[in-house]
Length: 149
Image (cartoon, rainbow, N blue to C red; front, top):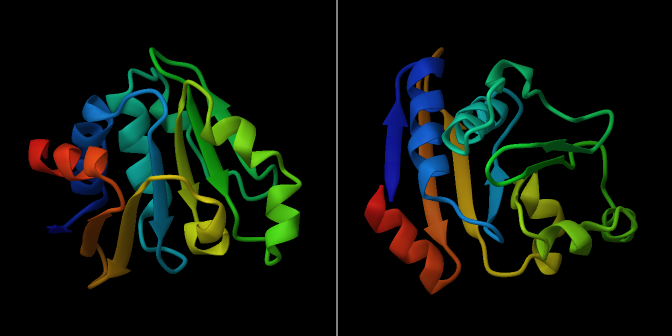
């Protein structure tokens, strides 16, 4: 499934729609170059999950994982600074992946071999404000989720 957004606001709204359909244990792997809208999409997901201060959602580049409280917790990973799978494994990602929250992982391609079933989200810059967002389900759960979108 492929969607094009024409502004940051549209990307946030798409994230909100997605967030409303997520449930505990869901894992989303975000892939895209710098500036492709990954964190913008996460702001919308946070809002859709009922996290009140979506403006507080930011790229966790320097802390690697941020936790946000809502009706379902959101665990937001940013693996930009990590290159080795062993460094990622040392973060204790399994504790998050199999917890009762939603995991959203920026630069997910760096830990693809550690991921359980997940929804892959590829973001690409197509213009100053235009983004192409492609969803790929890596389990039946996410195929069902995409039909709801």
